Image 1 (tube, rainbow, N blue to C red):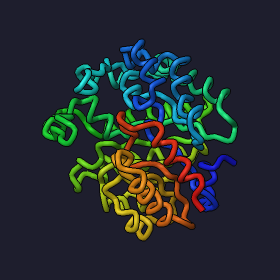
Image 2 (cartoon, rainbow, N blue to C red):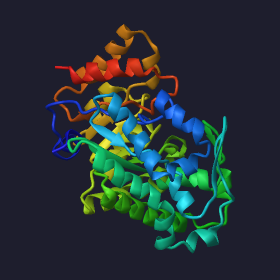
Image 3 (cartoon, rainbow, N blue to C red):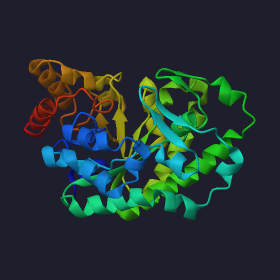
Length: 336
């Protein structure tokens, strides 16, 4: 059994599997070379050959236990008919949300639009070592609504009045999103993915009284679907701090990624019966080697004898030095 699957399903504690969010990305010169020739990000995600090649770039460089498919959480809104553009320095920009068009989507059109994503997974699985996991991913319904309905003001603020004052039936939208997200997950499983991660990147900005409606219940529905089809699932409700315990008690995923605002000692004490993942601040990788190794050992010592996948509390940053990352991986893999 693959190390990550064994850790997620059997709660294996014999080793610390390792992979990184955004491990296929801008910090790698080989990725930047491809990106410079392919300025349209969505088109790049829809090029199955290049997507597969990018996915495998970190696997060729480093001793990692998983590849994560090169794609984007906004491929689902794209598949559902919204125009998605990435503006340099500003991030993603989606066309105006149209409820009628959204509700009139059908699965055939969705699959046809995203078929290159599934093809990339098939191609990657064929080339990937059988002992390594292939991770697929989705954005959670709330996080997708933030982008689809234009709630994002900047990196730390949302215009929640826009959804509160909307005439749209939020539950109707959430249910429809859940339907297509589960369909997308199943398509990825059928293409060769063996783990899925749910990114709820904007969960930390949901008012506490709305967490159940916008975060817990939508994630729970997807987690239950993943368990039904036999796909190990990791949740990452970023920024909810000590609400992680409430999330875990209600949603019960196989794995739970903690962010860098969560104290690992608190996590070990309070987040039980789950495989934990991540936590370390990506900016630590900009420090000197002694500080980096000390931080790594803090997490590994803390989670010794617990099911734990080494990762970070967020994705790798573009300024990350690949040589430093290689030392991090070696440190984790040689830990005893």
